[in-house]
Amino acid sequence: MRRLILLLPLVIFLGVAVFLYRGLFLDPSELPSALIDKPFPAFSLPAVEGDQLITQQNLLGKPSLVNVWATWCVACKVEHPVLNKLASMGVNIHGVNYKDDNAAAQKWLSEFHDPYQLNISDPKGTLGLDLGVYGAPETFFVDAKGIIRHKFVGVIDEAIWREKLAPLYQQMVDEAGQ
Image (cartoon, rainbow, N blue to C red):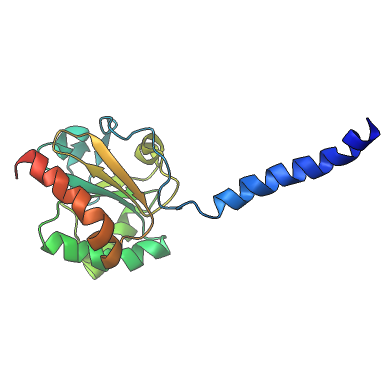
């Protein structure tokens, strides 16, 4: 019995070590989302620019990327030129300006260009909360019917787009017949 008590800390340590070792090999951009294959959450929020009120109905009709971004997000500044390039290639991109100042967002878009077809202002983070956003940037792939098909966490660079994400977007476009 005494031997068993002496071995218990070793067994607990080995169990924790195996659990942590496994975590070293997980892809941080593949955070699970309970929203995959579910409709985009209902919302009604103002546009970053103008007086337009945007709802989930505005996302219907064409496959799109819904990119969560903010001016305080350093990684978003790295990602932004790639989003501009994708938009110029015809990729339909909507933005969610997450927990940010609207005037700062407008200044950012005028300085760094605006790749977004629609740009939703989410100053309190309510839409971000409904989407399960951990931070920015995060990008949701939404099909023409408004169903979330994939979630990517982190910076989309040209290599990630070409090798991993472009085929997912193209599949949505093909399914929509566009």
